[in-house]
Length: 150
Ligand code: RTP
Ligand code: MG
Image 1 (spheres, protein in one colour):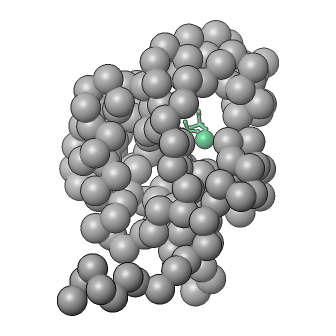
Image 2: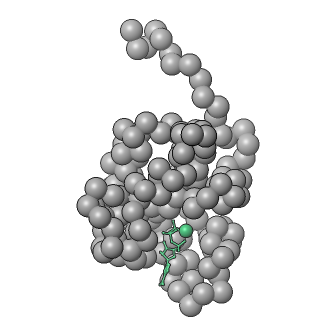
């Protein structure tokens, strides 16, 4: 079981609905470690880099309008099989198809306003982490701070 890093976005609908905290809590409770975290405004240019594979598709203009509509939380999560673990916790793209217990299944019924993004493979994770974070912004694991825990 390899330790992996994955790029996660809490999309504008999650931030606007005050669900960033609850969703982040779910990832932390699962045991994933936050390796990087920031609040950003996605620009049209950034959206086109992130969704390069979708830019030519008919739904892209709506996707860009949505992802640039308000602040987004970008983070890197780290853990064993983190890429597939996060994808499983998200559920399928459309909230209507997502089972209860998944993030999309618990919080939405939309295909577009689906709250969360997670990289879909190791290649995408490496590419997406580099889009959102400079190397020094991704923090390596440190030992627990014993004095604060005792
Ligand atoms: P994401 O990339 O945002 O994490 O979502 P995903 O992997 O579950 O879905 P993906 O196929 O990569 O699609 C990216 C986003 O495009 C929108 N979409 N609309 N109208 C359509 O047919 C359609 N298909 C995809 C969704 O908002 C999806 O999150
Ligand atoms: Mg995707």
